[in-house]
Length: 581
Image (tube, rainbow, N blue to C red):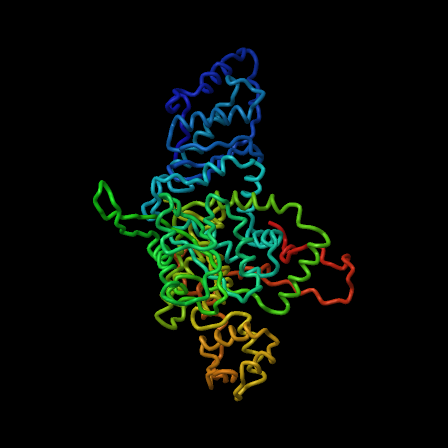
C-alpha cells in the first residue's frame, strides 16, 4: 500500500509543496495560553481517472462532495504534472482561501490518490504490445477536449448507468430508427468495436425498401466524424492509397454492395477482406523513379470495423465468413410501426433533442479505450458451444468479438487488468448471445426472421406437396422479387429444394425438404456457461438472469379508420418508451 507522500519532501519537479510550511506557521502562531482551535472541516476530494488516448495521458476528474470542480488531462507518471494538477485542484476547491491557508492534509490526500492512479492506472500506462497501437496520435483525444463539459458529463453518466444499453436503444429510436432494436444495437456495437484490436464487421441483408440502409446510416450518425470512414462505393485499390494511419481504428460505412457475384466483384472486395482478416493491407506496385522502374510497397494499417448492406440473401462466401450476417425485419408488424412513426413525425415534427443525443454519443465513442478485452469464461463458453462444422471457427470468433464490444462499451462498469485491458463479465455474454442468435443461426445454415415466416407459411400450405413460385407468392402475399429472395435463402439453408427448374414461361417448382430451421444458432444458455466456469473464473457466486426486455419490439399500432393526427403516437420512433439511462 502506498504511503501518503509528504508534500515537503515529494514535491516533484516543482519543488516542495507550499502548503506544508504555511500550515506549520499557522499552527505555531496560536497563543500558548489559548486552547487550540478546532480544525476546520474540509470536504473530501475524490480523484478518478479514465484513459484519454495513448502515451500515458489520462483524463483526471476531481470531485468535491460529488460535484466536479476541476478537470485536466495530464501524464500521471510526471511528478511535475501531478504537482501542478494538485495545486490547480486546491485553487478550484478553495477559491476563497489563500494559498497559505490550503489544508495540507487535503493536498496530501490528492497527491496520494494521483500516485495510486499512476501505479495502477485505469488504462495502460503505455499501450500494451498486444493492443498493436502505434505512436500515431488518436484524433479522438483532441476532439473530446473541445467538447462542451456538460455533454461530456452526460456521456459519462450514461457510460456509468446500469441501463446503458437501454439508453443506447432509446437514443437510436430518438434518432429515427423504428423498431429493429436488436439490429440497430448490433450495428452500434460493431461501430464501437473499431477501438478493439480485432473489430467486428457486419453485412445487413434485406430486400429493397426494407430499411437496411436507413438503420445503418442512422446508427452511423452517432459515430464521430474522425472515426467514421464513409464511402458509398470503393474500388479494388481505394483502401491502399489513403494517407498513412487513415484507417487505423476506423469504422467503415460502405454502401450497398453490387448484386453481381462474379470475379470482378470478388476482386473489388479482396483488399477489404485482407484488411478485416490481417488488420492491414499491403500492395507492391511498379513506379518510375529517376527514369527507372522500381517496386514500391504500399502498406496501410488497420484495424477497422465495417458495416455494409446488400439485397442478396447470400453474399459472396469469402466475405460472409468474415462478417456477422444481419437481417432487417420485413414483417407486417414492422411495416405498421414504420407507417405509424412516419405519421407521428409528420404530425409532431422530429425530436427536439436529436442533435444533443448525437453529441453525447460522439463523446462516448471518443472516451472508449483502445486495446483488448479479456473474457475469463471463454473456455467454459467453448465447452458448451455446439460445433456444427469448420465454419464455426469463424462463428465462434464473431461471438467472442461481440462479447468484447459489449464489454468495451461498459468499460466504466467493468474491472480492468493492470495493463488496462477490460475484463468482460457474464452479463456481456448474455447481451451478445441475444444479439448473435439470429446471425449465428443464419451463418450456420439457419435463416432470418422474414425467411422464417415465409417457411412457416409454406409449411402450413404445402406440406408434402410440390408448389410453384407464383403459388408461393400467393401464399405469402409478397412481391415476386421478395418471394424469390426468400425461396433462395430457404434453399441455401436446405429447407426447400427445386423439384423442377423454371424454363421460359414455366415457373420453377419447389418442395419442402422436411428439415427444420435453426433460429438460435446453438448458442449455450448463459446459465450453462456459469455452471461450467471454474471457481477462479472471477464470476459472482450466484447467477441472476439479465433483464433484456428493452430489446423486445413494441406492439405494432393497430390500424384505424381515423385520419385525425391526434390519434398518432406521441413519439415518432419506436424505442422511446424504454426507461432512460
